[in-house]
Image 1: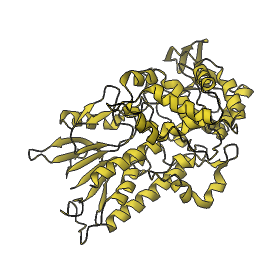
Image 2 (image 1 turned 120 degrees about the vertical axis):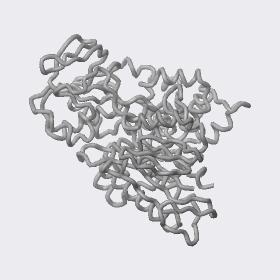
Image 3 (image 1 turned 180 degrees about the horizontal axis):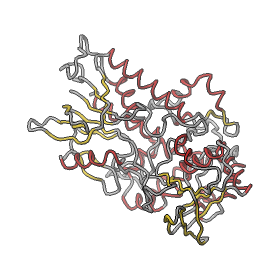
Length: 489
């Protein structure tokens, strides 16, 4: 059985790492391309298709500015499912050079995390080769997958070459940033800010910069501008004006109520889970710590109405606060959420989607060192945060912006709007269409695709029916481990 892995980023690395643990050794296996072995699991060659020059890193973790940091503590960045210490162990003594002193944890540049992904991929490839499962890398983009008359799958690349496979794992990453105001091609508009080392070169010291969006990508843009000594005005512009929350210092306390095991116990006879039951687990977790669930709920409800700068100031002051409520939400959204989400009834999932912005700001927080930069710039008047954006249009070499505060202009516009969850990257849209056309997958109503053929597997944000929040490394590696378990049977 030959396996094709489409995409060579973090999802593919997690899958290869898990396969190296799941697949048995094949005595006397050959390294010839396409060779298979009918015994010991029946796995032949694994072929990874990735056209990017930054193999194994994906879009987020390529070479970039040192100020562009991983936004998550090390325990949630392990590429090995179930091993929270794997990334920290790889960091070793280097972690002392990257400590966020407010968080008490190492927060490394994204490019350094990319080195970790490369290391893990190379180790997995070597291990699989030693086990008799050779891995080859094809530096081409897969344009479509078709089913041959003999029922075997064929992958066609942009170069016109064809590759046969028995199983396909789709690991293409998250969606491309949207262009909600149709500004592509306008002078002064940056459609995709990454890598920031390149995109910010186009911004002059005298430019007034408006950043579309106020999530983690927008935070990265502001912090990178500050790191380069930019002295001009910066505006964050979005519909809600909601900033990400701020990570609190880990305490070492692990949830005992909000766990996969307790969620499994709460399923009804049809396997469904009620959102009120999930809330009940959090309520029990907080009650055990002597905390008020209703006070936390009121705090969350105020996310969209509080002044964002004052909320930022408050949360920075609470980085070391002993209360567990937000900590439990932030950890379990990544560890338990991917399991609980498909068990929820559709009305509960719809309710959560309506509160996407609040949920995303809570469970995808910014790191304290970045929050400190934003607060400093806001207090000095260099940074403003605006809500209620209504229109953005190019006019006479500048951009006219209409929002809740009226009308103004900017000379540079950076697009930090996040793609919708489960959106296909622009380079993979034709591929996804081919999968549905061939009857291998069907679009999910909420985004992404769902395999309709057991030979197709999806790992990462494109998995239809997955969590409504963009996949985290922890969620992606959990998916990868499940897929590896199926492929390794």
